[in-house]
Length: 320
Image (cartoon, rainbow, N blue to C red; front, side, top):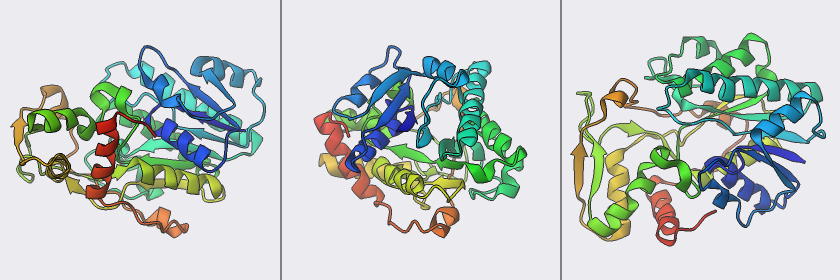
Protein backbone atom coordinates (compact mmCIF):
# COMPACT_ATOMS: atom_id res chain seq x y z
CA UNK A 1 0.00 0.00 0.00
CA UNK A 2 1.11 3.54 -0.81
CA UNK A 3 -0.20 6.38 1.35
CA UNK A 4 -0.89 9.51 -0.69
CA UNK A 5 -1.78 12.62 1.30
CA UNK A 6 -3.38 15.46 -0.60
CA UNK A 7 -4.57 12.78 -3.00
CA UNK A 8 -7.67 14.71 -4.03
CA UNK A 9 -5.78 17.95 -4.60
CA UNK A 10 -4.18 19.23 -7.77
CA UNK A 11 -0.76 17.55 -7.80
CA UNK A 12 -1.92 14.68 -5.60
CA UNK A 13 -4.81 13.62 -7.83
CA UNK A 14 -2.62 13.84 -10.92
CA UNK A 15 -0.04 11.65 -9.22
CA UNK A 16 -2.85 9.25 -8.32
CA UNK A 17 -3.65 9.16 -12.05
CA UNK A 18 0.02 8.45 -12.77
CA UNK A 19 0.12 5.61 -10.24
CA UNK A 20 -2.97 4.12 -11.86
CA UNK A 21 -1.28 4.44 -15.26
CA UNK A 22 1.59 2.40 -13.83
CA UNK A 23 -0.83 -0.30 -12.65
CA UNK A 24 -0.86 0.69 -8.97
CA UNK A 25 -4.23 0.68 -7.21
CA UNK A 26 -3.36 -0.25 -3.62
CA UNK A 27 -3.38 3.35 -2.46
CA UNK A 28 -4.76 5.02 0.66
CA UNK A 29 -5.86 8.53 -0.27
CA UNK A 30 -5.75 11.12 2.52
CA UNK A 31 -7.31 14.55 2.12
CA UNK A 32 -9.79 17.12 3.44
CA UNK A 33 -12.58 17.68 0.94
CA UNK A 34 -14.42 20.47 2.85
CA UNK A 35 -16.83 22.47 0.64
CA UNK A 36 -14.66 22.59 -2.47
CA UNK A 37 -15.18 20.56 -5.62
CA UNK A 38 -11.86 18.76 -5.50
CA UNK A 39 -13.78 15.54 -4.89
CA UNK A 40 -14.25 15.56 -8.66
CA UNK A 41 -10.51 14.91 -9.00
CA UNK A 42 -11.12 11.43 -7.60
CA UNK A 43 -13.72 10.42 -10.17
CA UNK A 44 -12.44 7.58 -12.34
CA UNK A 45 -9.39 6.96 -10.15
CA UNK A 46 -8.54 3.60 -8.59
CA UNK A 47 -7.52 3.48 -4.92
CA UNK A 48 -8.03 1.10 -2.00
CA UNK A 49 -9.55 3.55 0.46
CA UNK A 50 -10.03 7.20 1.39
CA UNK A 51 -9.65 8.81 4.84
CA UNK A 52 -10.06 12.37 6.07
CA UNK A 53 -6.76 14.02 7.04
CA UNK A 54 -7.59 14.55 10.75
CA UNK A 55 -8.77 10.96 11.17
CA UNK A 56 -5.62 9.76 9.45
CA UNK A 57 -3.42 11.93 11.68
CA UNK A 58 -5.03 10.49 14.81
CA UNK A 59 -4.69 6.95 13.47
CA UNK A 60 -0.99 7.50 12.82
CA UNK A 61 -0.47 8.93 16.32
CA UNK A 62 -2.08 5.83 17.83
CA UNK A 63 -0.26 3.57 15.33
CA UNK A 64 -3.48 2.11 13.97
CA UNK A 65 -2.51 2.36 10.30
CA UNK A 66 -1.03 -0.75 8.64
CA UNK A 67 2.57 -0.39 7.49
CA UNK A 68 2.65 1.07 3.98
CA UNK A 69 5.30 0.58 1.32
CA UNK A 70 5.84 4.34 1.07
CA UNK A 71 4.36 7.69 2.06
CA UNK A 72 3.97 10.42 -0.55
CA UNK A 73 3.05 13.50 1.46
CA UNK A 74 1.63 16.16 -0.86
CA UNK A 75 -1.11 17.42 1.44
CA UNK A 76 -0.73 20.99 2.66
CA UNK A 77 -2.38 24.38 2.79
CA UNK A 78 -0.91 25.96 -0.36
CA UNK A 79 -2.61 29.35 -0.14
CA UNK A 80 -0.11 32.21 -0.11
CA UNK A 81 -2.60 34.77 1.19
CA UNK A 82 -4.02 33.38 4.44
CA UNK A 83 -3.08 35.32 7.58
CA UNK A 84 -3.49 32.50 10.14
CA UNK A 85 0.12 31.55 10.88
CA UNK A 86 -0.93 28.98 13.49
CA UNK A 87 -2.90 27.08 10.85
CA UNK A 88 0.13 26.88 8.55
CA UNK A 89 2.28 25.62 11.44
CA UNK A 90 -0.17 22.93 12.47
CA UNK A 91 -1.15 21.86 8.94
CA UNK A 92 2.13 22.13 7.03
CA UNK A 93 4.83 21.77 9.67
CA UNK A 94 3.65 19.74 12.65
CA UNK A 95 1.59 17.32 10.54
CA UNK A 96 4.61 16.71 8.29
CA UNK A 97 6.90 16.01 11.26
CA UNK A 98 4.57 13.34 12.62
CA UNK A 99 4.35 11.57 9.25
CA UNK A 100 8.09 11.80 8.68
CA UNK A 101 8.97 10.33 12.08
CA UNK A 102 6.52 7.49 11.48
CA UNK A 103 8.10 6.78 8.09
CA UNK A 104 11.59 6.82 9.62
CA UNK A 105 10.42 4.46 12.37
CA UNK A 106 9.09 2.05 9.72
CA UNK A 107 12.14 2.56 7.46
CA UNK A 108 10.02 3.27 4.42
CA UNK A 109 10.42 5.94 1.70
CA UNK A 110 9.07 9.38 2.58
CA UNK A 111 8.53 11.75 -0.36
CA UNK A 112 7.19 15.16 0.55
CA UNK A 113 6.24 18.48 -1.06
CA UNK A 114 8.42 21.46 -0.31
CA UNK A 115 8.08 24.59 -2.44
CA UNK A 116 9.97 27.14 -4.51
CA UNK A 117 8.27 29.68 -2.22
CA UNK A 118 11.04 28.86 0.28
CA UNK A 119 13.51 30.76 -1.94
CA UNK A 120 11.82 34.11 -1.40
CA UNK A 121 13.27 36.76 -3.72
CA UNK A 122 15.98 34.37 -4.82
CA UNK A 123 18.79 36.45 -3.38
CA UNK A 124 20.63 33.22 -2.58
CA UNK A 125 19.80 31.62 -5.90
CA UNK A 126 17.48 28.74 -6.76
CA UNK A 127 19.64 25.69 -6.23
CA UNK A 128 19.15 22.93 -3.67
CA UNK A 129 22.49 23.45 -1.91
CA UNK A 130 21.84 22.27 1.64
CA UNK A 131 24.47 24.69 2.98
CA UNK A 132 22.33 27.64 1.81
CA UNK A 133 18.99 26.52 3.23
CA UNK A 134 19.37 28.40 6.52
CA UNK A 135 19.92 31.64 4.61
CA UNK A 136 16.64 31.52 2.70
CA UNK A 137 14.00 34.15 3.44
CA UNK A 138 10.48 33.21 2.25
CA UNK A 139 8.10 36.06 1.43
CA UNK A 140 4.91 34.52 2.86
CA UNK A 141 3.79 32.21 5.64
CA UNK A 142 3.15 29.32 3.25
CA UNK A 143 6.77 29.41 2.07
CA UNK A 144 7.98 29.80 5.64
CA UNK A 145 6.03 26.75 6.85
CA UNK A 146 7.65 24.67 4.10
CA UNK A 147 11.04 26.17 4.94
CA UNK A 148 10.58 25.23 8.60
CA UNK A 149 10.11 21.58 7.70
CA UNK A 150 13.17 21.56 5.43
CA UNK A 151 15.17 23.07 8.31
CA UNK A 152 13.80 20.52 10.77
CA UNK A 153 15.05 17.68 8.57
CA UNK A 154 18.43 19.35 8.26
CA UNK A 155 18.78 20.19 11.96
CA UNK A 156 17.95 16.63 12.99
CA UNK A 157 20.15 14.91 10.39
CA UNK A 158 17.12 13.44 8.63
CA UNK A 159 17.82 14.92 5.18
CA UNK A 160 19.25 11.64 3.88
CA UNK A 161 16.14 9.75 4.98
CA UNK A 162 13.57 11.82 3.06
CA UNK A 163 12.99 13.05 -0.49
CA UNK A 164 11.80 16.64 -0.71
CA UNK A 165 10.46 18.23 -3.89
CA UNK A 166 10.49 22.01 -4.33
CA UNK A 167 7.68 22.62 -6.80
CA UNK A 168 7.98 25.74 -8.94
CA UNK A 169 4.97 27.12 -10.91
CA UNK A 170 2.98 23.97 -11.61
CA UNK A 171 -0.06 24.19 -13.90
CA UNK A 172 -2.41 21.75 -15.58
CA UNK A 173 -5.67 19.80 -15.29
CA UNK A 174 -7.25 19.12 -11.88
CA UNK A 175 -6.51 22.56 -10.43
CA UNK A 176 -10.06 23.79 -11.10
CA UNK A 177 -11.05 23.80 -7.42
CA UNK A 178 -8.23 26.06 -6.25
CA UNK A 179 -9.99 29.42 -6.60
CA UNK A 180 -7.54 32.34 -6.54
CA UNK A 181 -4.64 29.88 -6.32
CA UNK A 182 -5.35 28.51 -9.80
CA UNK A 183 -2.81 29.16 -12.52
CA UNK A 184 -3.21 32.22 -14.73
CA UNK A 185 -4.04 29.88 -17.61
CA UNK A 186 -6.94 28.31 -15.77
CA UNK A 187 -8.31 31.64 -14.51
CA UNK A 188 -8.11 33.43 -17.86
CA UNK A 189 -8.83 30.81 -20.51
CA UNK A 190 -12.55 31.63 -20.80
CA UNK A 191 -11.83 35.37 -21.16
CA UNK A 192 -9.33 34.69 -23.92
CA UNK A 193 -11.75 32.37 -25.69
CA UNK A 194 -14.95 34.40 -25.23
CA UNK A 195 -13.80 38.01 -24.87
CA UNK A 196 -10.42 38.01 -26.62
CA UNK A 197 -8.62 39.64 -23.69
CA UNK A 198 -6.33 38.68 -20.82
CA UNK A 199 -5.43 40.70 -17.72
CA UNK A 200 -1.94 40.55 -16.22
CA UNK A 201 -0.44 42.37 -13.26
CA UNK A 202 1.65 45.47 -13.90
CA UNK A 203 5.28 45.29 -12.85
CA UNK A 204 6.52 47.41 -9.95
CA UNK A 205 10.15 46.45 -10.51
CA UNK A 206 12.02 48.55 -13.07
CA UNK A 207 14.05 45.50 -14.10
CA UNK A 208 10.92 43.85 -15.50
CA UNK A 209 8.49 45.49 -17.95
CA UNK A 210 4.78 44.75 -17.53
CA UNK A 211 4.14 41.06 -18.17
CA UNK A 212 7.85 40.31 -18.38
CA UNK A 213 8.10 39.02 -14.83
CA UNK A 214 9.68 35.57 -15.15
CA UNK A 215 8.72 32.27 -13.56
CA UNK A 216 9.69 28.66 -14.02
CA UNK A 217 6.40 27.21 -15.28
CA UNK A 218 6.27 23.41 -15.22
CA UNK A 219 3.47 21.23 -16.58
CA UNK A 220 1.76 18.74 -14.30
CA UNK A 221 2.48 15.82 -16.65
CA UNK A 222 6.20 16.46 -16.21
CA UNK A 223 5.76 16.80 -12.46
CA UNK A 224 4.11 13.40 -12.01
CA UNK A 225 6.78 11.76 -14.16
CA UNK A 226 9.44 13.10 -11.79
CA UNK A 227 7.51 12.02 -8.70
CA UNK A 228 7.17 8.52 -10.14
CA UNK A 229 10.91 8.42 -10.80
CA UNK A 230 11.68 9.47 -7.22
CA UNK A 231 9.27 6.90 -5.79
CA UNK A 232 10.91 4.16 -7.86
CA UNK A 233 14.36 5.22 -6.64
CA UNK A 234 13.97 5.47 -2.85
CA UNK A 235 17.72 5.54 -2.24
CA UNK A 236 17.88 8.93 -4.02
CA UNK A 237 17.15 11.10 -1.01
CA UNK A 238 17.63 14.81 -0.44
CA UNK A 239 15.90 17.94 -1.72
CA UNK A 240 15.17 18.35 -5.42
CA UNK A 241 13.91 21.32 -7.40
CA UNK A 242 11.05 20.56 -9.76
CA UNK A 243 10.80 23.15 -12.50
CA UNK A 244 11.96 23.09 -16.08
CA UNK A 245 15.18 24.98 -15.42
CA UNK A 246 14.08 27.65 -17.88
CA UNK A 247 12.17 30.75 -16.81
CA UNK A 248 9.52 32.26 -19.10
CA UNK A 249 7.38 35.39 -18.93
CA UNK A 250 3.69 35.83 -18.27
CA UNK A 251 3.54 37.43 -21.71
CA UNK A 252 4.84 34.17 -23.19
CA UNK A 253 1.97 32.27 -21.63
CA UNK A 254 -0.56 34.85 -22.80
CA UNK A 255 0.75 34.64 -26.37
CA UNK A 256 0.49 30.85 -26.31
CA UNK A 257 -3.11 31.03 -25.08
CA UNK A 258 -4.13 33.44 -27.84
CA UNK A 259 -2.51 31.23 -30.46
CA UNK A 260 -4.52 28.25 -29.19
CA UNK A 261 -7.69 30.36 -29.21
CA UNK A 262 -6.96 31.62 -32.72
CA UNK A 263 -7.31 35.23 -31.62
CA UNK A 264 -5.24 38.42 -31.82
CA UNK A 265 -3.07 39.10 -28.76
CA UNK A 266 -4.80 41.55 -26.39
CA UNK A 267 -3.26 42.08 -22.94
CA UNK A 268 -4.49 44.56 -20.33
CA UNK A 269 -2.06 45.28 -17.50
CA UNK A 270 -3.85 45.90 -14.21
CA UNK A 271 -2.78 47.10 -10.76
CA UNK A 272 -1.48 44.49 -8.36
CA UNK A 273 -3.27 44.34 -4.98
CA UNK A 274 -1.26 46.09 -2.27
CA UNK A 275 -1.37 42.90 -0.20
CA UNK A 276 0.71 41.11 -2.87
CA UNK A 277 3.27 43.76 -3.76
CA UNK A 278 5.70 42.94 -0.93
CA UNK A 279 5.30 39.18 -1.43
CA UNK A 280 5.59 38.98 -5.21
CA UNK A 281 8.35 36.94 -6.84
CA UNK A 282 9.57 38.64 -10.02
CA UNK A 283 11.89 35.84 -11.05
CA UNK A 284 12.17 32.13 -10.37
CA UNK A 285 14.22 29.54 -12.21
CA UNK A 286 15.01 26.13 -10.87
CA UNK A 287 18.55 24.83 -10.90
CA UNK A 288 18.10 21.19 -11.83
CA UNK A 289 21.52 19.80 -10.91
CA UNK A 290 20.34 17.44 -8.18
CA UNK A 291 17.64 15.75 -10.24
CA UNK A 292 19.96 15.31 -13.20
CA UNK A 293 22.72 13.98 -10.95
CA UNK A 294 20.57 11.01 -9.88
CA UNK A 295 19.80 10.01 -13.46
CA UNK A 296 16.57 11.79 -14.41
CA UNK A 297 17.11 12.71 -18.06
CA UNK A 298 13.61 12.88 -19.54
CA UNK A 299 13.15 16.21 -21.37
CA UNK A 300 10.48 18.61 -20.11
CA UNK A 301 7.63 19.64 -22.38
CA UNK A 302 8.10 23.08 -23.96
CA UNK A 303 5.87 25.80 -22.53
CA UNK A 304 3.96 26.39 -25.77
CA UNK A 305 3.19 22.67 -26.09
CA UNK A 306 2.16 22.45 -22.44
CA UNK A 307 -0.23 25.40 -22.77
CA UNK A 308 -1.72 23.89 -25.91
CA UNK A 309 -2.27 20.55 -24.19
CA UNK A 310 -3.76 22.16 -21.09
CA UNK A 311 -6.14 24.34 -23.12
CA UNK A 312 -7.55 21.14 -24.60
CA UNK A 313 -8.55 20.05 -21.07
CA UNK A 314 -9.92 23.50 -20.24
CA UNK A 315 -11.97 23.64 -23.42
CA UNK A 316 -13.49 20.24 -22.65
CA UNK A 317 -13.64 20.78 -18.88
CA UNK A 318 -11.89 17.44 -18.47
CA UNK A 319 -9.58 15.94 -15.86
CA UNK A 320 -6.53 13.73 -15.68
